[in-house]
Amino acid sequence: MELDNIDRKILTVLQRNNRIANVELAEEVGLSPPACHKRVKRLRDENIIVGDVSLLNPELTGNKLTLLVSVEMERDRKEIYDAFKRVINRSSEVKHCYQITGNYDFVMVVVVPDMQAFEEFVDRVLHTDANIRKFQTSVSLRTVKTTTEIPLN
Amino acid sequence: MELDNIDRKILTVLQRNNRIANVELAEEVGLSPPACHKRVKRLRDENIIVGDVSLLNPELTGNKLTLLVSVEMERDRKEIYDAFKRVINRSSEVKHCYQITGNYDFVMVVVVPDMQAFEEFVDRVLHTDANIRKFQTSVSLRTVKTTTEIPLN
DNA sequence: GTTGAAAGCCAGTAACT
DNA sequence: AGTTACTGGCTTTCAAC
Image (cartoon, rainbow over all chains, first blue to last red; front, side, top):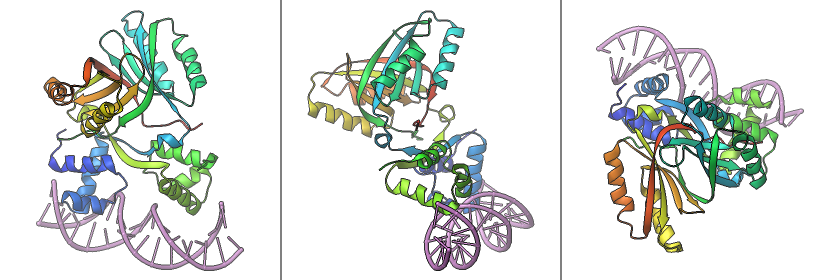
């Protein structure tokens, strides 16, 4: 599926504000409301837009600690990796997880209310997995930037 | 501001789907539509909900490369850090950036269309900053997980 | 907090270019 | 692809409880 200029305009707007009225959006991108509506529908149907969500103020939620955990597995075996991925996806503490090249195999961002909750996470997810050789944790002092926006130029 | 159980229910739903009709949301959380509507309005007014956005399929946008870059600064000076943070916030390639403890000072997730774009980013943001001692890049083979949801329990 | 009602705007469809 | 025209439904607000 190809995105033309109007699609990109639509997506740029919706990535910042998806509660905009279709009539407004239509005007911003230079289309009639139904034409705009059809495009948005198509973008959703074709899974260009995969979700529509509210973002919460992280400071107001009581989740105060952000940690970065690098993980090295024992062996580069697919089943081992897949099992680990499954656990990660079930763990609500894990905000992001990337499989990477280099000294470590995974890096993840973990958000918890406090250190005790992190220790519980470590016990539950990391210490029980025999396939993890080692992991290294850094404390995040501050989230400098985090965005859901993908630039479309 | 305190969140009660109903607020948390509302936020849990809206973090997954903010296009739900107010009537439906009201039913899910066990309120009348006007009462529910007032709460959602309050949550937005009080900046508990900080944004409402569409999420795009990262695979369909032409941004194909995700890299993790760890950065070590020359000195731990606030002005140096602040200048760096400003550059990061202006760089649309940077999706996330955390200031951390440990060997490195920052870790960031950079998304670009290709390696050439990453090299341009390195030249523009990293090589021109005399306050950066070194940086280390890992290629992300796969995004195992990424979520905007904050657990509210 | 609730119900009920009213207003207006918008989403979503239809018919057509 | 695009438009205009329509309508059913929803948001949003209000009053009264």
